[in-house]
Amino acid sequence: MRGRAVIAGVGHTIYGKHPGRDRIDLIVEAARNAVADAGVEKGMIDGVLVKMANSAPSILYGQKVAEALGLRPKVGGALDQGGAANIALISYAAMAIDAGLMEMALVCYGDTPRTGSRAVYHRPRGDDAVYGWYSTAAGYAMIHQAYKQQYATPDEHFGVVAVQCRTNALDNPAAHLRVPLSMDDYLAGEFLVEPMRRDDCCLVSDGGAAVIVTSARRAKELGIAKAVPILGFGQGQESWDVHLREDLTRSMAETSAETAYQMAGVRPSDICLAQIYDCFTVTVLQTLEDYGLAPRGAGGAFALDKGISPEGALPLNTSGGLLSESGTPGLQLVIEGVRQVRGDARLQVKSADNCIVSNQGGSMHTHATLILGAPA
Image (cartoon, rainbow, N blue to C red; front, side, top):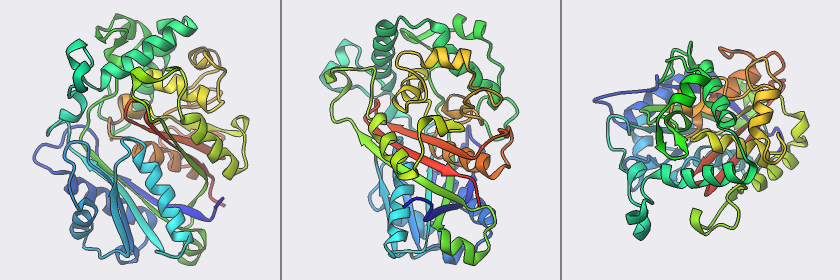
């Protein structure tokens, strides 16, 4: 599959608050922008794959989106893997195109948890809710605590991720949060669920995003000059809930990345930059380590010493990530990766020959990895 499918175009809405708009309306806007970016006709799209909306799951959701887009796709539907679903859908689109089931797919997502319902994030977690197992943040607080204790990790190692993501988002016109954040600001922040501070936690944002996937052959026929080759992808899923896992400091991101590396024919040392799913700062540290981009227990030290800024050893989340650009689940990271390897990102990295992107869902239950290459 290496390089046989490409991302031909990307599009999104402004992220933040969209009162009075529904999730499908946001998808339509994002899809229109992706079609324009690719320079194709809407009628060429014969696949519509949608990540299920967190705030309002719906039967036949993929078909409702296709109807709103005015499309009758050969292949369509919706998927729920939490935040891992968008990269999973891109990989399924690539495989379906390779199998001849369709020629061009729209992979998209839209939701309004900021101005609509955010119940999915703060719901009780079974019988243990009476002991504090309440909200998404509770599970990550346990993971954060386990990591902090096992590796004696200072707070600054988590803070460097929050501060850099915010810095990257400051001049991003689409970003939800553009308020400066220093390390002192981070350390002075209140605990949301101890030991996690507010700035360890991602945003809750309204927004929509979309990418267009097609074959490298079709992109060449259509003259799409900056089609981004998909070099590799992989997945890994954890079956156990957080409190049942033997080791909270590792995840199935390791399996997901190994699959993607093998397909792409690259090693961790070959990676130029990363867009890592940063729903919480601890997720970034663990994913860097699971991906082999930093030694075990040293993700934060790597970020501080080697650098994760656009000028650092491993530029990270260059549009602001979930922590500052948008709390929407992951497609914005793919879009930023595409722009970086095309060479037209806002904070463009000098050497962007490839980019690894992670998506992650639940409380590190599901994981998906994507490796993008530079256009030929």
